[in-house]
Image 1 (cartoon, rainbow, N blue to C red):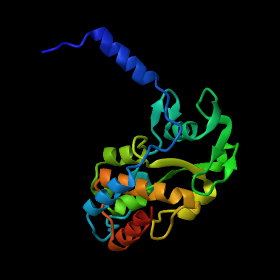
Image 2: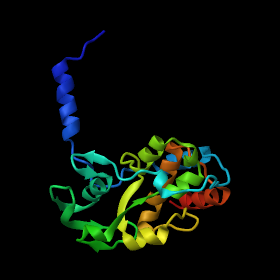
Image 3: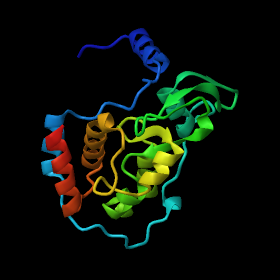
Length: 205
């Protein structure tokens, strides 16, 4: 068996660890793949028994140094972001992909879960372990976390795409592809109305 030199392994690891965090929402699957994924999702009625509580999803985890998930997303999604020793963003520019609103104050922005925590709960996460729910709530690999305006985040709430899609039309297809990507990865169910809505949107992409 071919042995990989230890120095080569160390070199690769150092390059991976030093790689910058991409400054964008992780790319959702393509429209074609999203259609396939959508056809594979289980259709079932939502269930809120036992009742949802946000405390059942631990946020925010420390990702690197003093930077938690929120600060990591703010750095990723912003431009020319400067942080202090606690990793709090002190300056930068952010543009919300939901509504196109720009700000230079990080405090104006929330980190939205594209598939909301309550939506995840009623579509399967109620059966997960606490560790699985924590991983979902802090997932930086899937297109699940994005920096948006407080107004957009609060307008959305716990809604699925039947009740809410971003008002900025140019982002709707990305949003729908991201929703399907996350639901498929985590094997979450969709209700029948949600499937009809997702099908309509993805067919229009």
